[in-house]
Image (cartoon, rainbow, N blue to C red):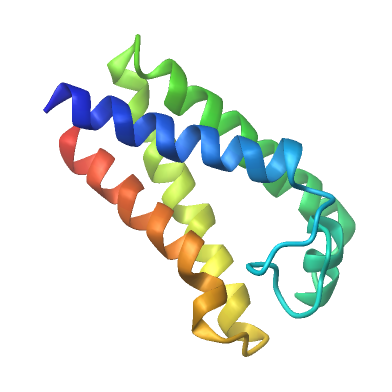
Length: 121
């Protein structure tokens, strides 16, 4: 079961880092509304720019903590819970602007994976 937990930590942690650090200025089919960048996505949601930076800092930080949990397992639960809260907010924002449900799929998938990590830790 430890290998499953580590695999989930790698999938969630590296995927969120990819979105926020590498793909943040690239259009994807998952962005809210017609946004092409993360900053535009927050504008579509009607959120201030500073909130994009706060959420980005939290998601990147918690992803790094989740990855550190591979070596320090006591870090897994708080990181997974924090990410689950932020991912729930992502889903709510997609629903708020009436995006098609498919756009919420990555956030829902990673939310479920985080909840599995909470259960396993």
